[in-house]
Amino acid sequence: MTRKPDSPKHREKLERKRRRAVDAYTRLQRAAALTAAAADAALTPFGLSASQLGVMETLQARGPLHQQELARTLGRSKAQMTAIIDALEKRGAATRARHATDRRFTTVHLTESGAALLAESVPVRVDAVTAIMGALSGEQRTRLTRLCRRIVKALAPEEDERSGGDEGSESDHHVHDADGIDDPDDQADGDADGTADGPSASEVAPRTADAEDVSTK
Image 1 (cartoon, one colour):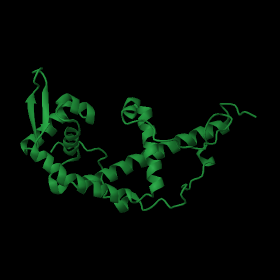
Image 2 (spheres, helix red, strand yellow):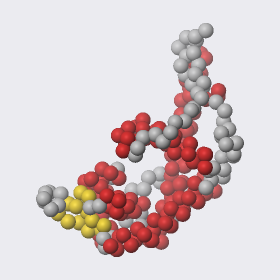
Image 3 (cartoon, one colour):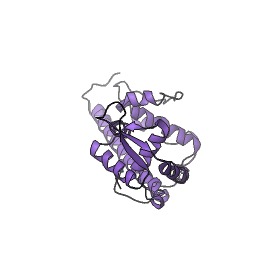
Image 4 (tube, rainbow, N blue to C red):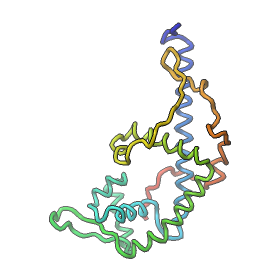
């Protein structure tokens, strides 16, 4: 028998679903802050921020770009991108030049010094990221990737399309009640691979209160 939408049971399940959603978001945000801090710490010996590295990696992959295009690609404001490029230009890792055909635009170029800096710093950061993600099994990392892509697809579908869309399907086996509300308590909490969740975030990354790198140094 279908329960009435305004029944006590329905309201109870809806409230439980809301609490689980907030808890999942809070844990996702905290994990992102901790992992970002640990990975970015690997750049400290090179005097780089994650923002600066992102600009240099983008320039190396795509070639010279308009400053506005860099800002859009990396999700930075014009003011933030200006400061980031100022810092890179000051240390000789990037240069600016007026566009060859449209003088209204400034094109940013990666220098040889910048390419050399990338060659040194990227492997160190990759090693740090690999160590952090070692807290998860291979299957857990694959599932985490798919779940993150679902969030990206829901919030920025055009970005998901640029990245190539889904890499295979994943069956969720959700239990749907007659009222149309998924009850998280109906789902198994264990991992499919039978492994534990691994060490806590505090064991693999330093604590930080900043969830987003907006450094322009």
